[in-house]
Image 1 (cartoon, rainbow, N blue to C red):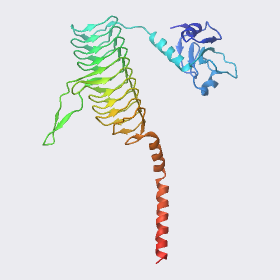
Image 2 (tube, rainbow, N blue to C red; image 1 turned 45 degrees about the vertical axis):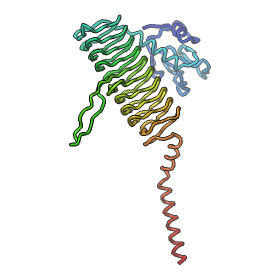
Image 3 (cartoon, helix red, strand yellow; image 1 turned 90 degrees about the horizontal axis):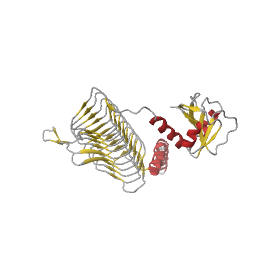
Image 4 (cartoon, helix red, strand yellow; image 1 turned 180 degrees about the horizontal axis):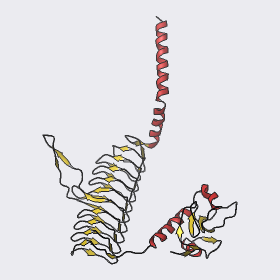
Length: 347
């Protein structure tokens, strides 16, 4: 796609300094940009790159002052990072729109497909599946019977959605995601064997949710596993049966959430966090990476850290003491020796 700097200036509600007619064809990092590229400066440490970059245009803060001449056309905006994110959306959406059903694919006669839907090759669409308008189903996707996919939702190659599960509008599901596999439920028998507990619920994912590659979300034993509106889930996350994730929460990679735990709205979960089952985590809770959460959190906005996780500032003080343990041990040994010598001398 080709844009003029003046067009992008209007799009970003910014002020153009330099050649407004210069053509922009791609986005690039400032240190790698070439003629036709546009980049941005949101962090002051990247200002020196502005003097030597080959980029045709730069999105910069409206208040920034350069000490040397900048050859690139400048688009001054209030928030350069937010502006560049908008450009990412524009350039991403400018790609050719896919529609139609590629062959070979198997689409049930009872499936209902909206307008402008794309079904990639080697995909399977089961009985009574509903796919909303402008949804994009990339190759090798499996949609089990009675699955519902909302409008403008994208399922990338290799996604598997088991029967009865629902995904809302404007969602993005990356490759390798499995939605609706059985929850991990077994009953221990007298002979130490384990009988499987049937998992007959489903997964319900609301609008504007993004799920990273190779994440798994288990169906409920009964009822629903629920991912509420606006949730963002990173790669390689495990969400167990009957878990509920509150709206606008963010979960980083390699996190595991055990069955029936309820995460509040607006929570932030760092990477490699583990949560025990049947917990209730208050709205706005922040959990530091590699923490192990074993108890419910009742107070909104609590910050947690450690294994087992507890209040963040207290955990930092505990870590400071832990680092001093060898020193403290030596002091105790010295005191013990002195007491022994004093006791010996007094006899």
